[in-house]
Amino acid sequence: MSNLAIENRLIRSDTPGIALHLRRKRRTDITTFGAERTLLLMHGATLPADSLFDVPVGEGAFMDVLADAGFDVWALNVRGFGASTRPAGMNGSPDAAPPQVSTADAICDLAAAVDHIRAAQDLRQLTLIGMSWGGTVTAAYSAAHPANVAKLVLIAPQWLSDGPPRIDPGGPVPAYRRFNVHAFRDRWLESVPQERRKEILPDAWFAAWADIILASDPVARDSMIRAPAGVIQDVRDYWSAGKPFYEPEAITAPVLLLHGEWDLDVPSPRMLALFQRLTGARYKRWIEIGEATHMMVMERNRWQVLSEILHFLRSQP
Image 1 (cartoon, rainbow, N blue to C red):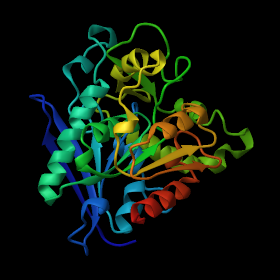
Image 2 (image 1 turned 90 degrees about the vertical axis):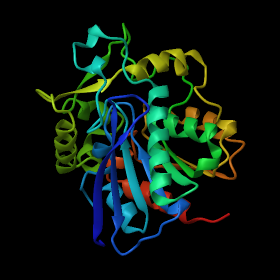
Image 3 (image 1 turned 135 degrees about the vertical axis):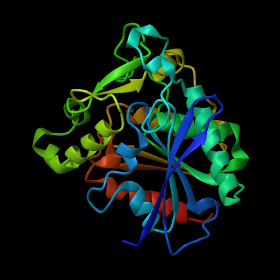
Image 4 (image 1 turned 180 degrees about the vertical axis):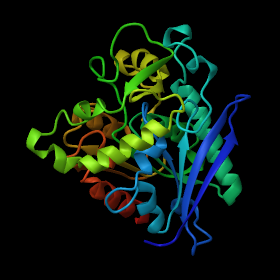
C-alpha cells in the first residue's frame, strides 16, 4: 500500500459551539484529484465514521483502500458522533431532552463539510458515499444541491417501510440511545447461518471494530456508547409514515446503489422501490452483494463493495 497522509480537522457547523470532525486520507505522491476522485463518506444513524470506514482489518481500512487507489478520501462525523461536538441534550439523562440530531441537522453538517472541502481543494463538485442513514443524508443533499455532486454512492440506504424498521424499538423517543457495542454482534449477524458467522465477521475484526467505536465516545462505560435518537423520530415521521424525506427524482448525478443479500434492516423490495424512482440520475446502477448484511462494509465480502465502488468511480458515460 502507498504512503498515505492522514489529517484530522475540526470545522465549523452552522450552530455556534458545534464543531464537526473531518478525517482525510490521501496518497502523498498525488497532489491533484478533481471532483470524481474527491470522496466524502457519511456514516449511518448509530456508528461513527471511524468504526465503519477506518478500521484496519483485512486488506486495510475502507478509507485506506480507496486512498491507495488514488482518491482523496474524507469522512465526516456529524454532530453527536465521534470527535464532533455532542449537543447539550446528549450530556444529561436520555429522558431530559427531546430527540437529538435530526436528519435535517445531519444534512446541514454534510453541507458544511462539502463547502469546506470544495473551498479547500478549489472544486466545483465532489463525490458522496453514504451508508444507511448516511444514504438518506447524502441523497437528500444531492437532490437539493445537484450542481455540487459529481457522483453518488448509496450503501443500503433507508427507504419507505411497511412497518416499524428494526432501528425503532418503540415507546417514547429519548434524547439519545444507549448502544451496547459487544451485544450488537448477535443482531449484526442475525441473518447469517450460525456456521458461517466467524467467516463473515472474524473475531479479530469485530474486536478491532469494538475498540474503535468504544474509543469514539468519551463517556463510554460497560460497552455502552451514546447514539443520537433524532433519527428514530424521523423514521416515525417519514419512512414508517410512507412519506419520503427527499425526492429521488431530483438527483441528477450518476448513482450506484449497493445492497447486501442478508440485509434485514433494508430488505430488497425497498431498494427496488428506491431504484425505480432515481429517474433523474444521469445513469444508475444497482449491485446486490451476496452473503452480506447491512454492515457489509465491515465484513469479509466488503472487497466486493470496494471493487464495485472503484469500478463505478472510474467509469465514464
